[in-house]
Image (cartoon, rainbow, N blue to C red; front, top):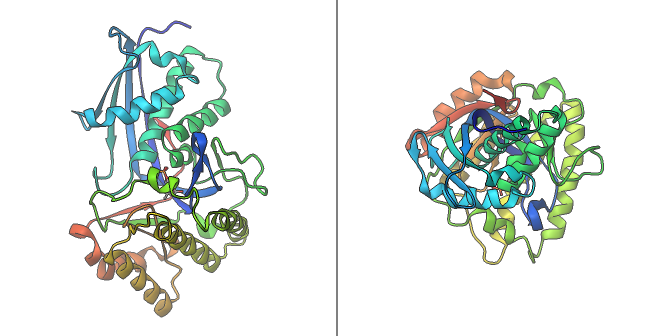
Length: 347
Ligand code: PMV
């Protein structure tokens, strides 16, 4: 079908891994399976306007963040276009104006790559659907996740919700290394509307990017054990989700977060992304849990910020605890209250 121009908008969320992806093979194939909660309030809205290309550039596009032209974003998107061109041949035929806006503050230390790359992948798939209207919804979702993965691995877990698995796992039918799938089993109501309060501990530039970090899992002394552990932790989580075992959840999720950072500390070169305030917060969460019997726990991304996870039933007490004891350890007292979400939406 011939289409001269058009416009599409998608809003796509960030996600937080419970079993972490750390280490990859060629073509963004993960070294182990991962599972994440899709977030709700932390998201990116992207509009892509496309029109007939007039320039002779291979890929013609401009990117705007919150209305400002962002030349600095172009190389990453150009790399993305080059990677996915074989799957979306129309990329060389149009000029794209990409307008993007995040709900969370830019350079807050919250990675915008998952929400940003998934939103862009979805917009491009909507254009693909304008050109090929017969595309089914299932194909659309799988291919959007597949393309998002090629932008940023964890972005493939942002299309759907509320729990998404990415990477082959022998107990999870339909799981795949090349796209994320919605978690296919029953989830106990203890995990419905789970809360995630993100404590912004350090907004500075990270000393080591996640791309380099993934690379350091090659020839890492503990790589094989780590990848096996991720499979086992995902198996254990299946049971936890079925039975509603909140203690089991806490143990797996915190162990995964600390293992991720332990891998960084014993790679060569080694590095540390946690800050003193990250540890202060972790210790306070442990004390609070011990004193109150709360099921609050933490997880970490590849950075110093802390995601505080807790059941909806505890929201009042935990938010009070966060305000009283944890916010003092955030940069400029900044934190974001979020919860589990249900995936990307076309606007
Ligand atoms: O998607 P990437 O390449 O930025 O890697 C993200 C890796 C972690 O956030 C540390 C873990 C995960 O599974 O999201």
